[in-house]
Figure 1 (cartoon, rainbow, N blue to C red):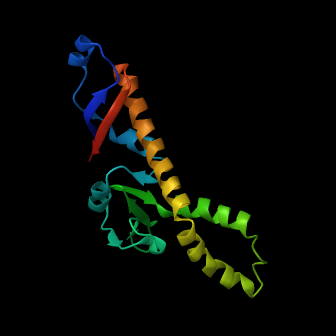
Figure 2 (cartoon, one colour):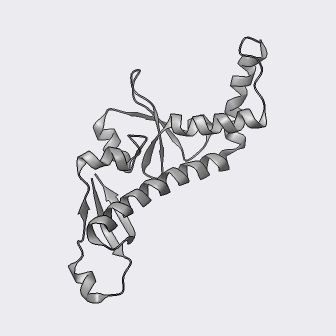
Figure 3 (cartoon, rainbow, N blue to C red):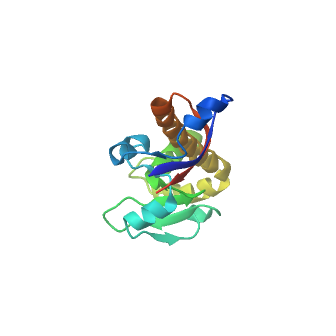
Length: 163
């Protein structure tokens, strides 16, 4: 994976000439930078890594694609060319749901309805879902920018990510 189309945060023309045009991120750092495989910065990288089957609209929310990775792997969602582990988002939203609507006893008959209402909660709170996904992406991009700053001494303002 590499950072390309880098815009550096410096006005020093001489320094700009010496900075790299792209930065390769070693494979051993990808797992660290990408939150131990919770997010892949390139949707196509994930699709080539494993035969994911994209399905439309996770929880019925437009612009978020559900990616089934098989029975033994975690599913992902595709959003803004990133693939993000569904459990990361679902766990946070489930916690919010439980705060807003305290859960009945696990053994009570109402619990099944409670779980089913989570889908409606996700749809009704789609802005929170989008905000959470954007935060995950921004954190990953900041980790990549930190790595670039570590090896060059200057933080990039903007860049693209390519597998």
